[in-house]
Amino acid sequence: MAPKKSLVTQYPAADPTDAARHFLARLSVETDPSDVHHDLQQGVETFVVVDVRAPEAFAKGHVPGAVSLPHRTISSETTARLPQDKLLVVYAWGPHCNAAQKGAAKLAGLGFRVKEMIGGFQYWQSEGYPVVSG
Picture 1 (cartoon, rainbow, N blue to C red):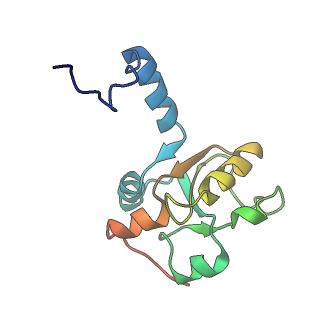
Picture 2 (cartoon, rainbow, N blue to C red):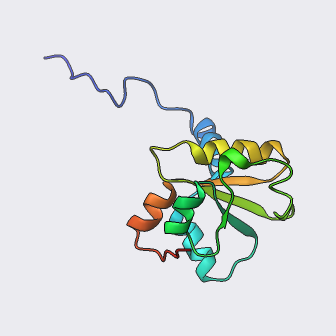
């Protein structure tokens, strides 16, 4: 009997060196709610959390300490208040929404160092992390 075809191994796995390079590249532009929450709890001040959703969504609930900067409004004028010397961690609704990527691309284009908080606000909430409104 012939071996069963695998959808997993249909394409060969990358060489370990290439795989390490790939995953390190992703980690250079992504973080997750767990790491953000941990650092906020520890008082780490090397980054600023930026909520790129609409102001109405931000008002209903957001990550504590996040600043509101809707991705559609990002410009050199609207980012003047953001520190250039800190990493910006951006998030939007969740994995079904590309506003975080749009915001991150605009911010990087303006010279900011940026990471996306993967999973967005949806994953933040699903982990039971604190949410503030207003």
